[in-house]
Amino acid sequence: MKNVINTIFALLFATTLMAQAPQAMNYQAVVRDASGNIVANQNVNARFTMRDGSATGSIAYRETQSLTTNDLGLITHAIGTGTVVNGTFAGINWGSGNKFLQIEIDVAGGTNYTDMGTSQLLSVPYALYAANAPVGATGATGPTGPAGQNGTNGATGATGATGATGPQGVTGVNGNNGATGATGATGATGATGATGPAAATAIYPLSGLINTINAGGGNAPWTRAGNFALVTVAAGQTVTATFTGVFGHGSNSTVPVSFAVCFSNASIPEASAPIEEFYTSNYMDATILAQPIKTSLTAVGARQLPAGTYRVFLGVKNKATGINLSANDYMNGMVIVY
Image 1 (spheres, rainbow, N blue to C red):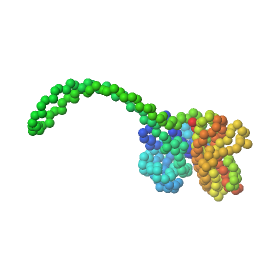
Image 2: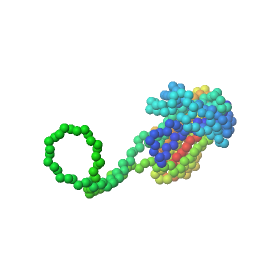
Image 3: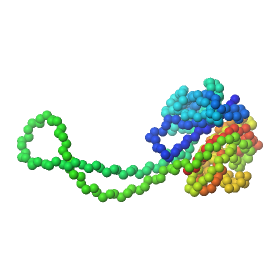
Image 4: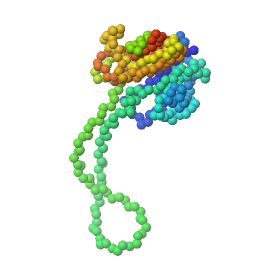
């Protein structure tokens, strides 16, 4: 059996505006064997299913795609461009409720798919920002070109009796336009439009194995799950992050957890540095299912931090009593500084 870590990234850059959103979204995953070794340069088949409402909801769209891992075991695919099995990607009603993405893989390249799990699709900060982004002011109208001179009018003759209306004649050639009058005074300059979002100044990809997270009960502290990104922030910059991790344990009970994008000050040794979530109201609660099922968690956050260097990572609170999260898998994600 081979394990696959699924990650979906949506990156929006402020360099291009498009009249219509592309009918596809990027998907990346790393294929590893049962020992955690990368499966490189091998053909695999994948099936992608978009479900409505819940992880077992009705199928809104399904496609398959034959993919080949690279030297690092990475597969990349634009969902919406594969071989359609059900529905159409353009026909997905994104506004009708929650959407869940199910991933199935056959590492032998056939159609004997193994279910790798189903994750809810969540909004990222740039999609939320785009929904409310201000519209800039309309630019000034360019100057009108010069008009030709009017022809000379002849003297008006006496009005004769009205004759019968004859057939309509051919339209004559337009006469020359008269001279353009003097240009009026320039109006006051309008207010400057709002400044658009800044381009990214640094991008930090992140991946690795998730460490054991000990049980802490209802008042469990934040614990770093996997590696951290060492991020340098200048005054006025904003840090955004998206992390996905796969968690498991050896118990037949479920384990309640909270998870969020967290950080600590890198100028303080990690063992004594306080851990904070990006926003105290921004963490999420979830349940890690009983063995042998593993549960995928995705955290998204954005925060403007004071100038300095920080550790940014996926934070987890294990709220169980006596059940450690010790059968975890891999995590990956990305941190972007604007």
